[in-house]
Amino acid sequence: MGRQDGFTLDDEQWAVLAEVGGNVAALYRRLTNDGSPSPGGVPSLGTLHRVVRRDLQAGRVLEVARPSRNRVEAGRYDRVLAELKLERAGEGLPVVDAAPVAPPGPGRGEDGEERTGPSRGGVRLFVPGARVASTASVAAVVEAVGHTVAARGMGCVFGDPGVGKTVAVQQALHLLPDRVPVWRAVVGVKPGLPQMRASLLEALGLAAGSLSHRAQPADRALAETLRRPGVLFLDDAQRLSPPLLDYLRLLWDEQGTAAALLLCGAGAERVIARAPALRSRVLT
Image 1: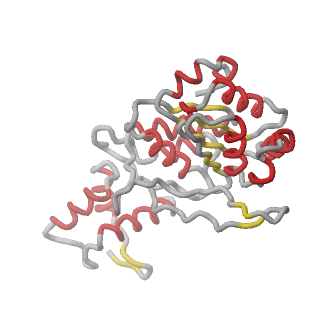
Image 2 (image 1 turned 135 degrees about the vertical axis):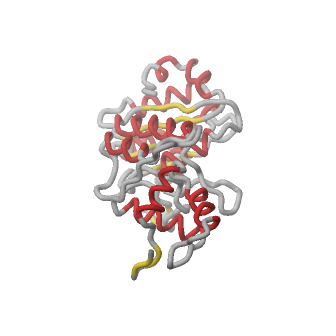
Image 3 (image 1 turned 90 degrees about the horizontal axis):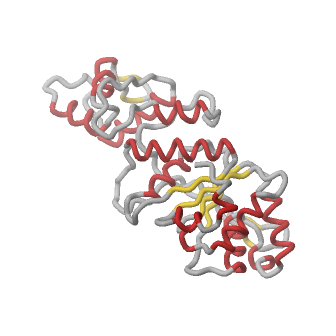
């Protein structure tokens, strides 16, 4: 059926969407193969995705009757984040990932140097038009990241190379409310403490050029920024030596720290095991 603001799904079509486990592409195939389409015609697949997201955000309930194998029920993300009190009122979460959000443009700090705010971009999939589906593995990472952020603690995501750790974590971070800042730090190969400090300063939007070789002012600036609720995502954490992990522990042991720390990498759990003081603080 149609309405002034565009195509919408009637109750029968919405029931079909629930029957196929919230899979919009499967619904599109059912509609296009059906010999009796709705009076308004069947829209494109992209339009159908937007219609489903719009209806979910407006509060329409999708009760998945028979989820397909390895697919979680459509409302799982919503319930997890709502239980953690991270969901914005009146705004649901899509069954599949939305298009990536462009990061904010660079600004300038008090010292006149350029600085970049936290990026909330989506997942880079390298395949045009690809989207992240709500599989059980992705949902498990979303739940673990949500708990870590809510508890303002430390979490670690590990696994073999190429299994999708970074994609799942990026999806989880993308689903956090906009009010939760996300800082992404890039770790070099065999970094020393100055390189590590510079990476953290850059990720948090601080003056990395003028502070990275001034240990005490840099550490004070990092500690001050980490008093804000947010999450620091550090990928390739297996590259960090035990002294660098202990440096992270000292930052998070500062009184008033309110940010969460998320470590990710193939073999990251083995590296963390060699830094027992930090390992004892890893929540998930």
